[in-house]
Every structure is written in C-alpha cells, then in structure tokens.
Length: 252
Image 1 (cartoon, rainbow, N blue to C red):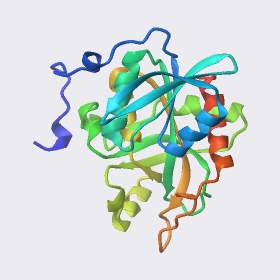
Image 2 (tube, rainbow, N blue to C red):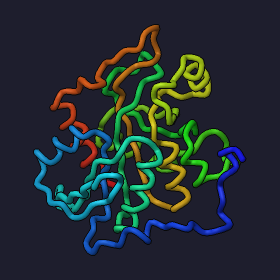
Image 3 (cartoon, helix red, strand yellow):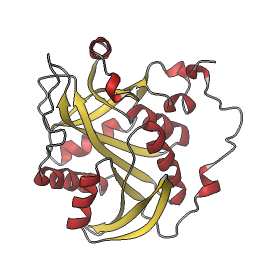
Image 4 (cartoon, rainbow, N blue to C red):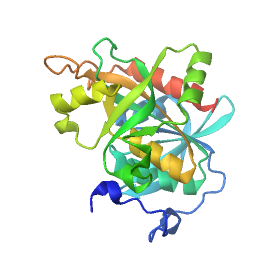
C-alpha cells in the first residue's frame, strides 16, 4: 500500500500523546518554536526564562517560559523534519498549548528574494511522509496553511515586510534535484523547507491554532548553490527574528 493511501480516520490511534504526556497546570497558552539551537541560546541570553517542562525525543527537550510585555510565552527548540516536529507538537498541545508559532529557515527558489527575507507560506507541497497520516490525498498535492492570512495581517500591522507564497516541504534535504526544483517552481513554490506541510496537516487534523513563518537563508535558484546566510547568520539578525516572533506571538 503506498503511503498516499495510509490515512485512517475510522479507527483510533493505539499510542496517543496523552499516554506519555500530561497537562501542565499554568502552561502558557502561547508557544514559540525554533529550529535553530543558536536561536534558542540567543533567546535565553536576552530573555529572563525558567524551565517549566520537557518532552523526550531521543534526548530531553526543555520547555522554557518567559513573560513578554505582560504575556506568558513558552519557547523551545524542536528537531528538524516533519516526524519529530509534529510528534513534539502533539505533546505540547497536551501540555496546554493553544496557539503555536513556529519560525525557521528555508531555501529560496526565487533568486530575486534576498537572504533573510520573511516568507509567510500559504500552501505546502507534500514531499514528505508525515502529512499523509493526518490528511487524506483528497486535498491534493498541497496542504493549505489556513492561518496564513491572519499571520500576514499581523506582519502588516507591525509594518514588517513579508512575502506570501507556496513552499516545497521535503524529507530529503540532499535530494533536492534541479528537475524537482523546476517542477515545484512551476507549481508556484518560492521556498523549500522540511516541515510545513506536515505541521499544517497535523494542525487541521487536531483542529490546532498553528502559525509558521520562514526566513530565507540559502538559494537554489542559480547555476551553483549559494550558501548566503546558511551557517553565517549574525547574532543581531537572530535577535531580530526572536523579537519579531515575540511581537507576533502576543498578537495571536
């Protein structure tokens, strides 16, 4: 049976998140998630925080709480890739999260989009496996990001430039071939990353309030791959993205 036919909404899960994680009293309803360990280090350095819990994904992943402009916000570093990211999110929701904002890097499929630019994904191409267990193939090759319009409105209110567009979500970072890139570009994708379609499929299935924005680092729309910001991001830029995430989070 191909993976595209594995979606089952007729029987229950055997192992549920609530079997391994319990609700935490006083857990912040708003949660910010980063994919960058240095981003977490910068957050902890610049924001008074306390550890309020953890999830286990081969290693313990600490969950921190801070107060920003009077609002309690949780913050944690997730793993790369759809399976780990979604599994952890399922557990974070059990803990008590109500509104979740993820932000992470992406590769540009449009050479005119400069490095560091913010992207609000509107649809995510399903080139990964996790989404097929949360949403059937009836929706097509793309998962709609139903929170995109609300997120873009917040960026407009903050007067922060952000581009809306489709993204290509893939499990195989080192198998982003030129042929597949051109096909995804023809389908309207302007970025590539590893989690969005899985995250938003899970959000629809769980009826969860989940948002995501991206920032461009490397560039694939060129004769030779361009590293740009990938591995070269200065500290002040990390501080900028964290501040943006915090400002967005208090408006969700």
